[in-house]
Image 1 (spheres, rainbow, N blue to C red):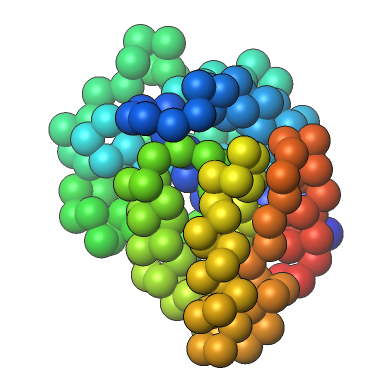
Image 2 (image 1 turned 60 degrees about the vertical axis):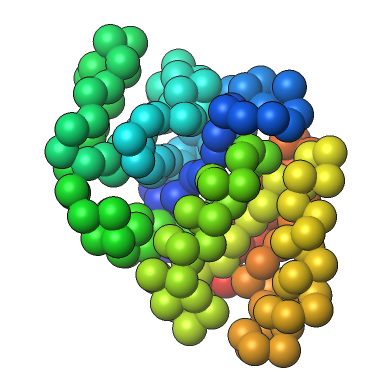
Length: 184
């Protein structure tokens, strides 16, 4: 692992919209696992906070969470004591997330959360930033991304096979994140 004892992970997830019914439980499991390994979790709140199960589980496991939100964001009462950094400009929020994150983590969610992960990674400098991405491909949630990484990204981003990794189960998520941190 990197020298930093408290790695910061930008985690993207959503339990909104059509898709896998177990997304909320996957978020809870991931939040618990990441917090137990000492990771600081950073999430976006663009209008709404969609990663509530992740944040709740991480905090219950003793984890540190930061929410990057716009000026109008109001945290749900249960999350009132979670740190919130307010940045009204959406692109500036994405850049800030890229500054803070050592690894980007994508959990199964909506297409919007996947697009936001990609935009944050690009704002951080994408492949040039050398910031890795770990995607939890549970129930083939990121199968299209796996294909894109193999067919497109591999030709334009050096060592993309090391920068974008996939795992199919939440139990292996920390192993992939830890490996990604070792690349830093």
